[in-house]
Structures are given as C-alpha cells and as structure tokens.
Length: 154
Image 1 (cartoon, rainbow, N blue to C red):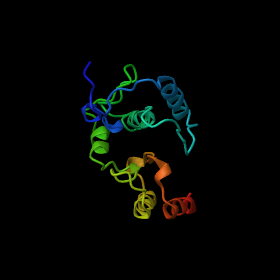
Image 2: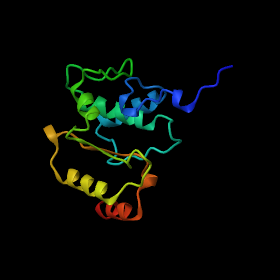
Image 3: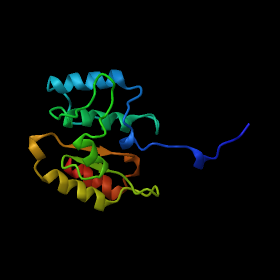
C-alpha cells in the first residue's frame, strides 16, 4: 500500500470550487428567503473547517450576483459558470460588492488594518444597487484590537 504525503493532496480553495456538494437543501432555503426578501442581514455559518461552508457561501453569492446575467448560476446542477463575470471578479479579488476578511496565509491573526479596510469598503455605496456581502473566514483569528474595531462598527 502506498501512503500519500500531505503534500500530495489536491485541496481546492472554496472560491475555486465550481460545484456545490451537500448544502443543497440549505441553498434552496436561503434562495427562497432571498426571493421573498426575508434573508437576514447577517448569517453565521459554523462548523468544522473544510466542511464546505465557504464553498456554499461563494455559490450563494454567485447565485445572487449573476441573477440577471446571461451566464448565471445553474440552479439545476448547483454549478457556477466559469465564464460568469461575477465569478471572475471574485476570483481576482476585485468584486465591488464582496469583501473577504481573513488572516494571512501563514495562519496569522486578522489584523486591525484588515478590519479598517473592511470598514472603508462598508462606507462606499454599492455597485448597481446590489447587495454587499462580507465573508469573515476563520473569525477565531481576529485579534483583540480587530474584534473590538469590528464590534464598534456593528
């Protein structure tokens, strides 16, 4: 039996995953709430790391952002169209209505400079009168100053 090394694993970044696995029932519930204009202002998804929460989030915001697009989200297959404009903007970290707050790749804490950048994002108006979405990935890595700055503005 050949044992694989950890470096041999092919880990897909949640924002790169074009297919949604599991979470389909949640997706339908969230989309119904959105259509009825009853989606809460804030949602907290909690669970084990790697369980698909971020992938679910990226799929859901793609569904919302691409609703009126020619290459919109495929609700039958739960699949993001890789030619979708919003998908590509998020991939390049330049979507005007989406902000990702996360620590640096080395596992460092989320610094106050990152929170200040988020607050500047929130002070700007939305593009095309669309909703703004913020993903705080690994919120447990907010340091004391970062969490205080975020709480003051919530």
